[in-house]
Amino acid sequence: MNDFKSLKDTFTLSNGYKIPCIGFGTWQTPDGETAVNAVKEAIKLGYKHIDTAAIYGNEKSIGKAIKEIGINRDELFITSKVWNKERGYKTTLKAFEKTLNDLCIDYLDLYLIHWPASVNQFKDWDNINLETWRAMTELYKAGKIKSIGVSNFMPHHLKSLMETEIKPVVNQIEFHVGFMQEETFKYCNDNNILIEAWSPLGTGKMLDNETLKEIANKYNKSIAQLCIRWCLQNNTLPLPKSVTPSRIKENTEIFDFVISDEDMKKINSMPYFGGSGHHPDKVNF
Image (cartoon, rainbow, N blue to C red):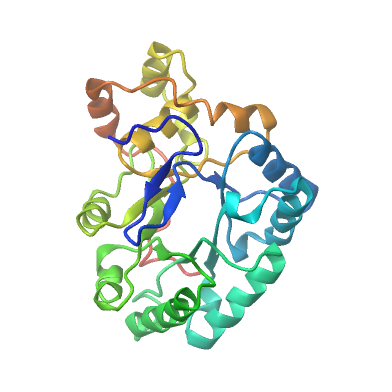
């Protein structure tokens, strides 16, 4: 288990690039003042890692927050994602430029394919993913992106990319208590792909669970803190999201306790009880 002590501590990706161990998620964070204030608060509290995406519609606000707080660019790790309608070679290159302009930065630390092109929508799904990857590989080689990866990819989506010159270093998937995606989890671990956990609190559905409440109480922690710590102890990188200053702070206070092996086993074996319900091969967006 990694011995993380603060938000500055990092995982090392397979390309040698370092990524701060917890990311500040911005999915469903409304554009405008809410996003600007949330990101500024997160940076003030020590977050070094901001996770966004073009489809979230808040990249301009995130760029504004970074600019206003006046932090050096190299002190932050910024991730974005190419949306489904922009997949393909030329469209990915164009989408990347827009993201860079919206964020007011000159490079990304990590760029991900947001969802795989899938068999339920495209006969040539594999080729679409490869063409998207070709554009990202070019940008990576040009130094405009420091690391490239994917999101919501299952092993069969990853197979072709793993045969290319530059392999994915990250797979950002829905990962929370009751939904560990064991097959994808094992594949990524076996292939040195870091798993990032989106929705580590199950979009809030974890927070009413009696079993988790009982375990969290044992450590004098909230369920949210327990879930974030649980992700880290499973060697995944959690991306908690909040726009409430007290919760943003609370989500950082997870370095002063360790979940016992016994409790980890108990949590790992919990059944599915809440999640998005999105399956990468069945989504229609």
